[in-house]
Structures are given as C-alpha cells and as structure tokens.
Length: 626
Image 1 (cartoon, rainbow, N blue to C red):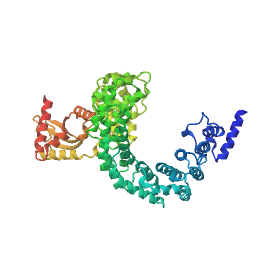
Image 2: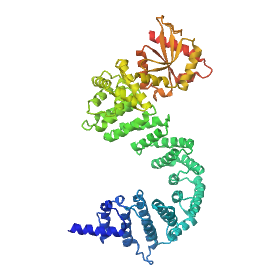
Image 3: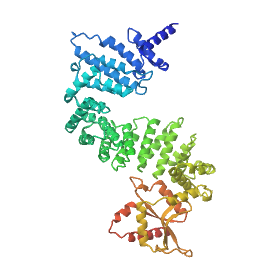
Image 4: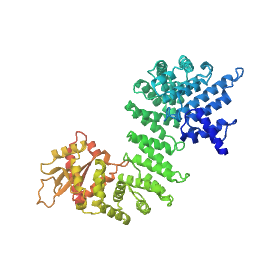
C-alpha cells in the first residue's frame, strides 16, 4: 500500500512537470523522490542517466533552496550571483546532452522551459565576471539551437530580452575576453554567423582572433586555439594557428601535444590544407614519441599508430621510434602480463605491419607473452595469435619459437569461422616452413576437400584474387596437383588482365633493347598462375639465345622486378608472398632473376642498362650451375 502511494505521488508530480513518456518513469523517479523531500536524497540517480524533464525538476528545486533567496545586503552577493549563473550554465550543458537525440519529444523539453531557466540567472551581466557571461551565452545558444524545431523558434530564442542583454554586454567587452572564451564564442556562433545581429558578434570575434593568434606564446592558449572550428572559408586563420602550433610544440606537455594532434587530424580529414597538415602531423607525432615511458603509455602509442595508418604516414623516423617504445613496454617486467594489454600491442603491430615494417625481436617478445597467458582463457588469445602469425608471415619474419607457438595455437579449441583467415593462417605456416607439421598437414588436407575453393570466386575481385593466390601457394608447396584446383583458370585469367607497373615497363623495355628478338617472351602466365613480366632464354654460358626446342642446355629465366613495396623494413627482406613466388617458380622449372628497385635506381642515367642486364643474366645462370 505504501508503495502504491509513492507511485501515485510520483505520477502526479510527473504529470505536473510536463509530458513524459512511460518508459522514462524509472529514470525520473529518483529525481521526484529528491524533489518531494525537504532534504536532498542520498539515493539520487547519476546525472547522466536523468532525462531532460528530470534535470529541469531538479534544477528548479536546487534554485529554490539555494539561489533565489539572495539578499541585496549580503556582502557576498556578487559571488553568489556568479555561483547561480555558473550553476544554471552547467544545467544547460546537461540538458543539451540529454536532449541531443529527442529534441521536442515526450521525454524532452520545450523552448519555454529554456527561456525560463535563463531568466533564473536574475542578474545584470555587468555584475558577473566576463568569462561567466560568455559561458552562459554559449550554453544558452547551443542548447536553444539544438532543440528549436524551426527558424521562427530560433529567432525568438535569440531575441529574448534577458539574453540580448548578455549578448550586448559581451559584444561591448569582447576585447577584454580571455582567448579561451573568445574561441568558445567563435565556435558557438559559427552555425548562426549569417543571422543578424549574431553575425556582428561572430565577425568581431573572428577579427580579434586573427590579430591575437600571432602573439600567442602560452601553451594553454595554443591548446585553446586548437578548439577553433574547422572552417574551409577561413584558411588564413587556420594557417596562422598551425604555424603557431609548429613554433611552440616543444613547450607543450604530452596532453597538450595530443590535443593539438587531434585537431590537426580532424582538419586533415576535411582535406583542408593537407600539405601543411602532413608536416605538422609528423612533427607532433615525433614529439609524442620523444617522451619517456612514463608518462608515455600504450594508449598514446595506439593514437600515433592510428594516425599513421589513417594518413599513410610511413615515415622512416617515426616507425623505428614507435617500435622502440613498443619494445620498452614488452620489456617492462614490473607490469603483469595481461591479455587485454597483449591484444593492444598486437593491434599496434598490426598497424605497423601495414607499412611493411617489422622487427623480429618485437614479434619474439610478443610470442613469449602469448605463450605465458593463462591456457584456460583462450577466447581472445586465439584472435591475437592468428594476427601475429599472419603478420610475421607477410613480413617473412622467422619466429624463434615459431614451431612451439603454432603447435600451441592449433592445439586450442577454436573454430575458425572466417574461412579467409583460415586460408591466410595455413599460408603463413607454409611461409614459415611448417607445412609438414601433422596438425598443419591435416588442416591443409581438410581445406582442399572442402567447397571453399569454388566459393572464393564469389567474393569481390581483390579479395578473391588474394585468396586464390594463397590457395595456389599452399597447393604448390604441398605438391597438390594443380588440376584439382577449380579456380586455377580464373586465377590465370585475372593475372593475364593485371596491368604492369611503371618499374616493370621500364625494365622490360631495357631488356628488349639489350637482347636479340626471339630470345624472350613478354607477359607470360605460368601453369600455376604466376605472371612473369618477361621470360628470357639463355644457354649454359649465360648468353640470350633464340628459343629452340631441340636445345638441351636451355635455361628459362623468369625476370621479376622487385619494387619498393616488395621488401619489408628496416632490413629490406623480401616479403612472404615474394619468397613463396620465387619458391613456386623454381618448382615450375624457372630460374628467377630479381631486379630490385634500389639497384636499378643506383644505375642512374649515365650507366648502360644493357651491361647491367647481361651481367645479371650471367650471374643467375652461374649460380644455378654451382
């Protein structure tokens, strides 16, 4: 019965406060309990869980208890007015958060309640600190624009007498406003900058910002400038802000640098002044990585890696520094090895591996961590381990405990639902030379008995090509007959259609000029589906000759150009797929002649390319005869 009375009282209170949907009762009831008691309840809801109506009710209650009864003779009257205005300003921000999705819906608020709440400030703006006036104006405008249903309401909202007094006072004293609040006002009025009279305040603020930016030297002011809204119509303002950040980046703390970096990233995402942003991004990322380990944390490294990934910043300075910091975390024996931290480090390495950069010592340390994890909880470590194995294979990194790690990984109960990931894993085992392990051999046998081979052709073109190449590599490694691969003809067709790159074209042209006609063949696709830019026929002396089926000592040379993206860094190892391609071509009876980009570039213009090509042919044939 007592419970019924409480609910009945709550219902009447809610109906008096305005329209409220039934599903909001549970969220508002603690607030009603708070409002119905003479003393604030200790069992009040967390602020962020209250609905808009609940915030209004609570605000009215607190104003009635604490703020309305300010005596004019009170010696602390100005301070109390300031506290009251600041309190209402905070309520505006809470209301904006709670109303962001519902506007004028049943659990929202109406514009009249916002006006009444602003009137509750009940103070002349000249009696308040200028910063407090700016906060109130900003909070009121942002909330009003968020909940107004039409242009008429917006006009009425920005024309309220009490509000106009605050706006006028702010406009008349704008030059005395601190930089942080000036930026706040600039951002607040940016959406309504073309609406009179707000346009006057906005452009006056913009003019002062342009004048003040070159004179900024304090780190806090620089961070404040980073909050300026990204406006493609104001490149001059943002150029000066970026210049200021670049000049004083050394004086910023780690937190301040990250704040500036986030701002520059957001601007770069809009493709505004990208050249300057790229230079500044590198400068800020480098500054973050220069910090020691602490205060630098794994979170900061994750931010840097995500920035590099997003904007393809494969910088030769940042990558080694980032790897050094990762290694420091792995070597920190004071911290307990946790699965969550190991997952984050694995994701970090995954992002770094996208730039074809990897160090064996880091992979070995991560493998050691994974082997030490609790064997009873493998749900997460299976996903981490698969990423580590695939990345190590892609970078052609030989793991110190590779065989043990693979055995441990495959012994866990895991159902690999993603068939493409399973293909990549089996391919990774072949790259690492573990294809004859019993568990790996069983997995490969199962793979080629399934219908997976025919289903991969249904994927998008790029994904299907990658999967078919890996399946082909596994089949050639395990000596599985190529006739049993249903997708082989499709793979050969796609390889034949693939266009040659600029480096491949230049090398092929040089070979054509150096060798007699009939001693080579261009754009050859092998029975296993490998594309060879140019196939050269040479005799036992390394001399190019016209092909003759009756010749017994004829060598078929598969010329493969190796560009920048076929090597891993920092030690310039051939990537996993390059090593597999060479291995497969040898099995098909070819002798592989690789022309790396760095050797070709060193020849320059003056060196005769024909001499280089003929020398490479002789060296290749000689190496096969040894």
